[in-house]
Length: 321
Ligand code: NAP
Image (cartoon, rainbow, N blue to C red; front, top):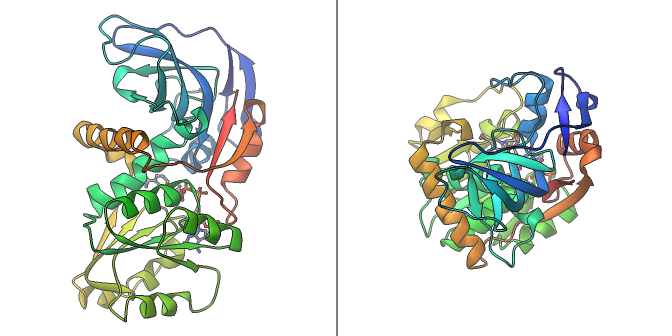
């Protein structure tokens, strides 16, 4: 089969398409034939060698995919040959024609959901679910600002929050992104590139502020986030690309929390709960992943350049073998 291989950490150009042996499942493992692989910002942090988690070289990047079960090892009971699945976590990487997973990393993909949409589930929807419910304690009737709602995690968060009865304020940096956020069911959409957009947010909440913020670019926004929180508000830091100075008094006066999150800390139980909810959401049509770009697997380097662009996100980037 063909797979992207990385032999040294570095820029996008270190990813090369190569021929590698077909995968064989061991006990409790499943081999999935990949129809689409999700491209996440974290894949490029790992490839550059700057991430906390460094795989042994050479390796195949990627955590997420949509595909069909090809083979399974002894003891596997949850899936069978030919079943459509999405993959969230992989032992061998997903930028390839096949991937090897533990049985628990493979989830049923409803018939009406495309493989590309399946590839958009794992990291983006998992993170949005974790940010809202496992870290953010989101409750119906609260107001959430999804600060960066036009990308993979943001569109997922808008759909999830709207489905359980939160009032959703989403932000994007372009007109096209704003329309996308509105189409996901956001009640209000603001432009995070325009002056004074947080004043508009205060007007929308009648000066009360929001109960919860999911923050995609904390190094730019955290200080201001603390000034638009309601009493007992929470900011969940999902993305940050550098340091920032904050005024702790803005948190004190509100009894506010700043809560970090990383998918790496998801426990087995939390992972199970997350995917039970996500599978159900795909089946009942609540969750509709938005695909922004489909890029051929051989052009993985271009996909990494696209996913790291500072603005202009529009749904999810997937690689197609
Ligand atoms: P993505 O698809 O590239 O989306 C990036 C989002 O950030 C877009 O909505 C973009 O909006 C927005 N953005 C750009 N400038 C912004 C600003 N000034 N204020 C607020 N938002 C802004 O990336 P993603 O997959 O959704 O991931 C988002 C971030 O979360 C990344 O930094 C990623 O590394 C991180 N992340 C963390 C975890 C974790 O476990 N903690 C998991 C997944 C992702 P426009 O393009 O419309 O301007």
